[in-house]
Image (tube, rainbow, N blue to C red):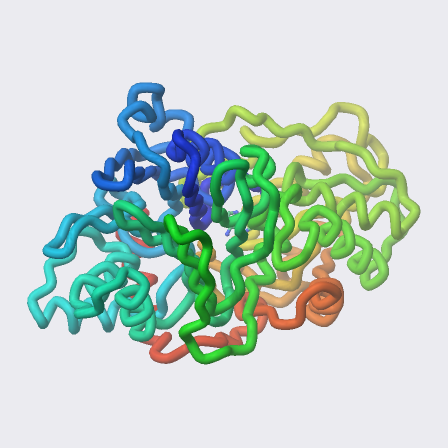
Length: 470
Ligand code: AMP
C-alpha cells in the first residue's frame, strides 16, 4: 500500500571520517526508515573502543539525544530492521555487536542467506553458541573462526561459505568493510562526504546528509574504508547480476537511484507500459497512495485519462494496523485510506497500485470505491502477479497466503468484485527495467530462484520463523 508499511526488509548505513559519524548514520537511517521499522541500531567507534545502541521501534523513537551522545567517534554503522527471518526481538536487532578473542566486531546485513539454517546447524554441532535467531550471526561466527590476520580476509573467508543475498557493513574499531553479494540482489551505494565516506542502501540517505553519490558498490565487491582510504576488492567469482526488481516496483524510495534507475521515473514507466497493455475506457485514474502514485500518473498520461487523488491516506497510522492477522488487516485498510466524498460519484474509475500480495487491500478498496459511488472499478497493477515467496530478503508471505499463487487473474477479479483486473506483464516489466541494467531477479513472479541450493530446506525454515515471529 505504501512505502512505510511495516512489512519490509532492512536498511544499512555506514559513515567513516566525520567527527560525529553516529549522527550522520542516524540521519541516513531516518531517510531509510521505509526499509524497516521493527528495530534500529548504531555502533560507533573512536578508533579504539566501540559503542552500541540498539532498540525496538523506529529511528526517531530509539535515538534520543542521550543515546546519540553515547555513540562517539569517527566511524559508525547502522541498521533498520524488518524481520524476514528470525524472531522479532531485541536480541535480533542489528548491528550485531560482539567482543571475541581478537577484538570487537559489528555487522549490519540487508538480505537473506539461503543456507543459513544449514550453516548454523553445523556451527552449533561444532560448539558455537548463537545469541540471536537471525541468519546474519552465522557470518560473525564464520569470521570468528577464521585464522586470517586481517578483517578483510576473515570477511572473505566467511562469505565464501554463505549463499544468498547480502549487502553488508562490517566494522571493527578502526575500519568499515562494505560488501555486496556476487549477484547484487540488494542495492548498496557509496557516497563522499566533505570529510569522509558513506555507504548506504539507497541514495536518498546520501541526499539527506549532503553526500555526493560516487557509485554503486558492485556485485561481488568489497569496499574497505580505513585510514588508508577507500580500497576495492573483487574476491569472489563473477556471477550474472540478479538485482531485485521488486526494489524498483515497491521497496526503494521513489527519490532514490537504484540499479542505475531513477525509481520514481521507472515506476511511471511501469504505469505507462501497463496502460499500453491493459487500456480501458474510464473517466478518472486514481492511485493507491503512496505506493501506486507514480504508476498511476504514468498510466493516466499514457491513456489520456484525467488523474485525480480519490483516496486520502492517514499518515499517522501506527503499527497496530499493520499486524499480519487477516482480521486486523481488513480493519487496517479502512483506517489508513478514505475516499473523497462526491469525487467518484457516477465515475468509471481506474485504480492503480504497485502490487497485490494477499489481496486484502485491493478487495477492501474496490468495495470502498463502490460505496463512494463509482460506477465502474477497474483495477490495474504495475507489476505481474506475485506467485512465489522471496528467499532473498523481501517480506513476502508463504505460498498459501499469496493470492496469485493459487488463483487466476479472473478468479481474483471476481473475488475483488472489480469490473476488470489487469497486471503488468513480466515481459513489459522487464522491458522497462532492462533499459538501465540487464540482470534481474524476478523469482517472486516466476518461481525461478537464481540461488537455490539448498533452498527447499531453508524455505521450510523461513516459514517456521515467520509463523513464530508473528
Ligand atoms: P495485500 O493487501 O496483502 O495485497 O497488500 C498489497 C499492498 O501491500 C500493496 O498496496 C503494496 O504496495 C504493498 N506491498 C507490496 N509488497 C509488500 C511487502 N513486501 N510488504 C509490505 N507491503 C507490501
